[in-house]
Amino acid sequence: MPFHSFLIFIIATLLTGCGLQTDQATQRSTDYGPIIGTTDSGVHIWRGIPFAAPPVGALRWRAPQPPSPWEIPLETLEFASSCFQGQWLGTSDGDGEFTGSEDCLYLNIFAPPLSEAERREQKVPVMVWIHGGGNTIGSASTYDPSHLVRDQNVIVVTVQYRLSSLGWLRHPALRDGPTTPSDDSGNYGTLDTIAALRFVQDNIGSFGGDPNNVTIFGESAGAHNVAALIASPISDGLFHKAIMQSGIVSVGDLNAAESDYPENGVSGTLSSQEILYRLLEASDSANNRLQASLLAAEMSPQDIADFFRAQTPAALLTAERSARPKRQGMTRVYPDGYVVRADGIAGALQDPDRTPIPILVGSNRDESKLFNAMNPQLVEWGNPDGLWSVIDRMPLAIKRPEYYQAMSEYGSRFWKLRAVDQVARTLTANGHDDVFVYRFDWDDLPVIADLDYKALIGAAHALELLFLFPEALENPIIEQFVIGDYADDAQTLSEQMRDYWGAFAHTGKPGKGLSDTQLAWTRWGQQTAVETFMILDGQSDQGLILSDATLTTDSLLAALESDQRFDLMGRCKALYSLTYRGGDELSNQDWEAFAGGQCLDRDYTATALSMEWDDE
Image 1 (tube, rainbow, N blue to C red):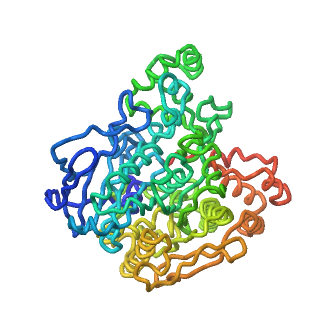
Image 2: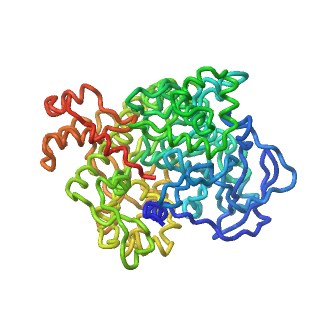
Image 3: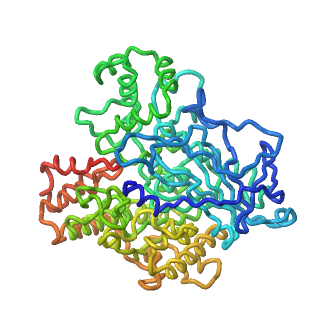
């Protein structure tokens, strides 16, 4: 097993219920037919409920359609297949294995065991979880929200959505013929989440849920997709509160999504045209990219659409990988003007006429370390000895510890600035009163194979998921290799976090938690007030504290400019690296002002090459 697969495994452990016996008490009606689930550890669970028709054949790259109805109670005991994706727990040689299915538009419902009378008399808050994974990997089945359901008295719905170029793709040929504005948007994964929310609105009452109290929440790409829903005019009324954990708010470029790459191969957005060229080459219709481009120019829109739809999902994702441009960022939504506003997520955040909703947003203190740890430019990788010899390749040492720490600090701070502080600042400046911000700081990690994981990983990207979905904390692998001697501390922080998240779902404010016993979580504040956020940490460290150590572009650039861990060229290269990926660019004005303009007109070729290492 490669170490990056092991690392992802311990951070997002797949823990599913084992009870596969139907429970008559779980029979419910939906608009499409009756379903029956199971009960596990005091929670009613329905797995694999179809909320849309399989997006295959003519429905590939089309807005999701309703599922076919059924009459006999559907047994919803097992999770549906993940959406088609690269094999993220696969082999170490990067041979392009795939997993999942295009038939994947299913959701799972976890609910308190309410009687029929209780379901009529009391409606509990609903939380809809949108998983992360860069919009290229991941599955709803990875997350077990049973603790949230039991302890916070909420219903949690976990949803799946199309990924990669099956979920986000724009090409003129796909808009040829009878289509709808949704079909033409290219935002098929976003439309899937909207369809899931419509299913919740129409059906959650049968499960005891309140359709007028729905919180959407997600992490990483899931948080980006939450932000996209906030920026979607057609999602209005489908949810009432939002939680964004370690997301981004930049969007894809409409023109770049359908254009040839420039000669240098640099583009922040994957191009469908370049995917088409790779597919033509792979089908032996062309010998090289030039021939493929000439052939594509002669094909009719119908021919191109038919050719795209004739491809297997494996062929599509293989071509997508081959067509990746330099500097590509995460797979992001398109500001098509219908599904997502033409002025993007930023436009929605800045719109004072947009109906304000309570929003909770935050990041982890060491976001960048998860990715830096997998970068062979920064960390020495090799074959371990002894107990860890079952791992064929894993990190052995941080090559330049001081540099690694500095780059991780600035990378994580820039992440917080863009995805959290600027978002909160914009929202409060435009009429959103109930904005709550956090930073997750828990970093009590063990030494593995003589390497200190507190230094290597720390409070890294996705680590907070273990605390929000603490079924993982009770897993022996997690307990031994992740939380070690801090098991009790971790459980306490998990309870505190869920108490806050539950209170937010119930009331729109984390306050003192549902228990009404915790440190009062104050709002970020208006323009004239002090900007404060909650630090979430273990009792052996800071515990729960409020902080006003917020970030601005000026303060971050000033800190980097004076940081003695870098020489001048080192500062220039660091800034270039930190703003390298699509959606993360620094303005020309900031570049000109940094270090008195001394970083302009320098050769960053070697730095760019170091950023293009292959992490798959």
